[in-house]
Length: 505
Image: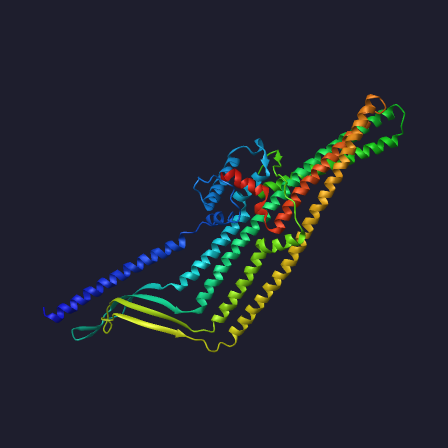
């Protein structure tokens, strides 16, 4: 074997080794990329990372060694555990508080999990945009079979069976559209995070409003029950008086109609309470609510001045921030349309691992640099850019309109709160007056100046005022939460603090 033959065979061994290494490297890279794509496929994990990100962590011992993020994860673990215990136990055997309702909502709300899926999709688009900037490695294999081999003498010029394979690497060098797409996908992910926060606050307020509605209807039910008992007792007395001939039949008919009316109102209120309990169960994910609902909301919040609250809402509300982010997204899409005017350049390296054929036996590699610059496209890019400019202006006008709506919402919420404050003060005075009237009726009953029916009426009026006052207090608590909602700090409310304190310690 001469020197040239040894050098040729040595070069072939090196080329085969490099080719095999390239194939193995390509396989490993493919597995790595596949792992990067599939390592975050659980939307619930995304939801758990984001849903309490803006909720302050409750005070804890300085030596517990946990970060805020770890504490929030612990809170969510305890919330899931609590939801599982409620499933395992009999719901009717325990009472349900407002903070418990918040826990169940955070653990079971399908609407929040849908937002988690949308967040997952947005992050997948962001990873897709990043992937378009990375090199693409392709392994190609081709097999051809001819009807017959072409021979020239004893040599085969074109064999019947031909097999060839090659490895290609394509790397974008300059493509402004890819960078613009990365910017767009990043902003879209931020939009989904803000949408999740907005949906969370909306759901928690809906839970609180329905919770207080059930409690208010229970107060109404008790008041209507007292009125119904009074009317039935009055009807009994009237029937007795009719039998003794002291009154006419028309008085009994009127008393009977009054009793029927109160019974109908009582049945209607009971049905409304059942419907409200059903809505609350749907919101928090319970098929059967506990019989007792306990209001553990300690109302210590008092609103400030309307202009200050409005300014705060413009800074803190997630939907306002989402509107600003939508403007950023529209501007990024405008930039993406502008990038279509720029050229694109990419490099492609192909390495033939093996090739058989008459004139294709010794091809080693090919390097190509491709450039494309669209000069004339019939005006499509101009139309797309004009549309992108219009979207930017639209988003800016939407932000302006939203800020005006926020100002109105804040003003309405504060005025409603002040109205309920005044109503509570008025009912306090009425309650004291009714209490004095009840005491006087008791004294007159002992002196036999009035009958039991008159005493029952005075007692019913006193209890009605007490229940009306309690209903106004519940409405005042709901109005306080509404102010927090429209200002954008529902995450600082007392029920959320209880969730963090009771589960985060």
